[in-house]
Length: 173
Image (tube, one colour):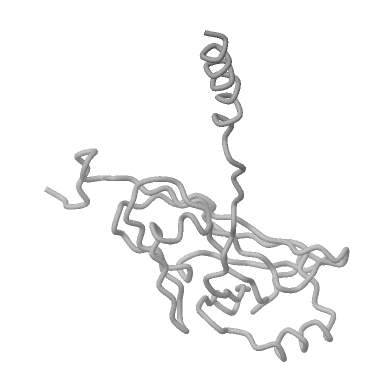
């Protein structure tokens, strides 16, 4: 009897340890690059927009990015609709609040969202075509440091709705 009680008690005491959630870590993966716009140049996005020599040249020119801005910050699209980053207003600013044309930015998404966002990259653009409803983040981080040595960035939230399930159609009657 004591042995049976001991086994049951051991099993019960072990349950809280087994029920503890595992640690969760968010991993961001780079899916391409973007170049910021100014009044005369449009934003660009794609893969391999910059070489190491380009970054070195900009750094030697002492170009520092103190702020990155992307508009809109929240986008709403339906499942299967495509969002291309060149449709966004992407701007980087220096310490004088002047827009920097062509400031190099890395574009990242969460690793656990990658398969649902289905990124497609070319030398001309980065496009996302989500296949599951939800909210997803896209980060754009400067590859040039601010004067304090930190890297500045902006985040865009892509809200994907299942319009078919909601009975909403993009077709006009």
